[in-house]
Image (cartoon, rainbow over all chains, first blue to last red):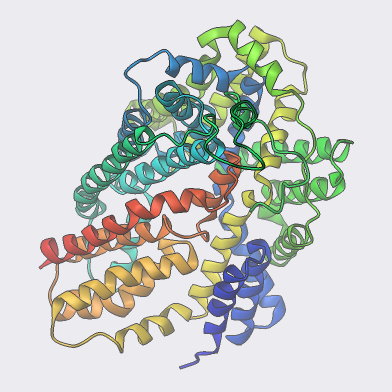
Length: 264
Length: 315
């Protein structure tokens, strides 16, 4: 057996460990693997090109950006926050549990590409989650607001992954069916899809529990930055420290140009 | 018939517009790099089906080089936060309507098309109907916004470019990873790893084999960023020969829940760029791994549950 192509995997692991740009690590690993497996350079590049080309449908959801961007120009995110701030009963946890249920449900009926990070998380779910947290706990520092936004994105992923396989005509179900078929095991997509249901329920329970714990951690001993007990950069004076508390909304403003590439 | 290729034309045209606008954006010190990057990506979307495999491969390498050489940057935002804040007050909740239009057309449109006699018209390519309807929703929503708010003509593209620049090369990485997955599969790396895994499982007991299968799915997914690449490998290595043929487990359970064990790995890896790195960039989080860190707490217990589910339900 030829173990040399495994070096490609090693390149990936090293690349990530050393924090090289994955846009470089990935094609380098792919080309190294191909060459070590005995393909010539033109063959490897062609293979890479064909596979890239075959996966372009992934790019389609970006089509919503002009609508989202345009509405943001007229204050969409601020509006999303204002709406949630009006609901007394809204908490980050409850809001995201509701979204988790919605995301699992629409994915289970095959409408998984109608929601997602560009489509729903950036314009609606994340600002609403931040607003729910601020309505309950006052202005958030940047780390906390980032954490709340990360939970919004995570909830979308969990809802998608553990909802979509209930829909029998999805790619992963077809892939399972075809793989087993090649061993002479014949199954209908529906027979496979029903076995996604127990995990979907488990995922809902596990992630909902974590969202409720998030609510609790937000309300437990306040990480009060405005009270002056957080000596950061010569803080300690209450008035000065409160100046570091971002005004509502500033967490969303674009970072200064120039740091765009090194924060990933 | 409206096909996936038509949708790619539209998405490609949008990226071509981003490229043009980038080229003339004097606030961005790396405007030519951005223009080249989005321009090449637009070329791939629009003409990829006719360029041939080798030319497509060269585009992939050029995109990697532009990103690797840090030739992509960001310009200034067309509007300030304060401006947006003020306008939000004025337009109220009607601002949500255009998004609801997009979602409603995509959701109800797909359902209506698939489950009524409309399907007989075959106006949409099979399995592409939601994509087509998503685009239709976007165009209708844009028309509504123009009729209502009368923005400057280039505003949707300028604002779209603001958002795409915030995400940067992470837009292209998912396709790059899909390509890597294909190369790994075609060169037999999967089978080699599967063979190595098989040598470390003790013989004769079911539970360790189930654990190896579930953990293997998650680990291989973490490495490649894609459970689709992991499944054929782990099925060939452990799932079929051990769990199904030797221990007579239910293949439907092993297949379906095995894949879901792999999805737990997807939640924990930066290689799954479109699910984990793209949202961090899109939400402008300080830590690019912020989403992954939050997901680990859900993924690990769920992986354990999936392994137990296979053990209970399949045997």
